[in-house]
Image (cartoon, rainbow, N blue to C red; front, side, top):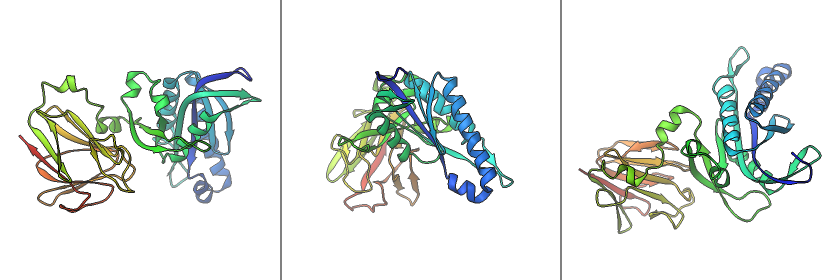
Length: 303
């Protein structure tokens, strides 16, 4: 990167989770070797996709890439080679990393980069859990359709030094995750396959999904949702229901998960995963709610 010139790049932070515990479990020498092995993999993945490692600080790497796809390709390789594979010590202790990305303008100075975009990318990393890749709407907008289909909004965050919230997206890099989350449904693509309807009732209002209704709806605390539920455990866009291929699928995109209580006693907890809605029962966001209480969303599937 040219020093002093403002450039738009994809910024990636990759951080080893639980490195302190590695030192406690393995001892200094073995843990240091494990950390260095992770940093080597992060560097190799960065360079494999045209990126540049700007710096390493302890057990964290900061890299920049010319495109959003390059950043996620590198993130995928890092997770595949570390979180999915790496086991260290005689006890075969698993090693995991968390990754945060953002796309924005930075200025390069003295082998480092600066700007609000750097803080935003770093915030994504601090929000991530072991094995996660989190990013922003700014980066998602730059992605090609293949990667964009694997990004799901799960929350909002306020980066350090900024007053505006940014949407937080999780990028699904595991094949089984991608299958379970179900890509966004194109209403035109499923119009001919919908059959039956799903009725959702909340505080005297009814929303119909499917035949003669909508192909997809969202639920959460933000006012733009089809069903607005307020609560401190409820994410802005908490969950959605898709109608596709003759099925009604609830997809949770939240921090605290969604509870489905089917009439008949079965209870399902869904967190960043999906479950089919059948029969009738109660949906509750963030915590279990009994039928008739203010947070209970009643559902019934009609063939």
